[in-house]
Image 1 (cartoon, rainbow, N blue to C red):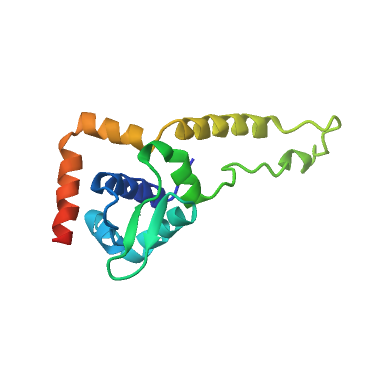
Image 2 (image 1 turned 30 degrees about the vertical axis):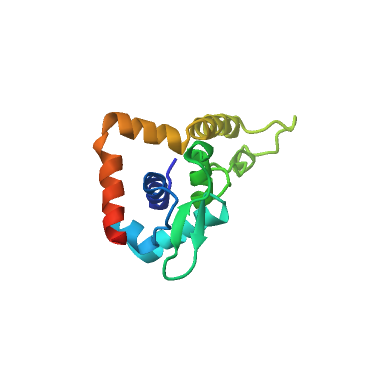
Length: 160
């Protein structure tokens, strides 16, 4: 399973928005500067999150982004789907019906490779759907407790 870098960017930005609180919106340029990312590309990822109701976008000179839902209500799968789309990762084209031995399955059965890939993807999606942004926040706070405070201070300095 390969995902675009936009998923990583979006997840990290959601964490940062959670730690900075929802009082003020954070501009895309500031979110991008935190990781030295291209603002225009990150903004596209943030707009995708906004379309899915994960973040809200506020226009104007004091505009930017903030979480639209509580971290407990945002799953990793929500973010992945917002960035990558809902399409399945594997698409069976029934190549077993082609070539010298190819013929449609007489019993109408689905391809066994397709079935195996769908089961694996379903497990992957379920695992991501079972983990929330709040879960990741707790893990970060446990493993690297200085990160939330340092993140809040960095974003607060930009507002000052």
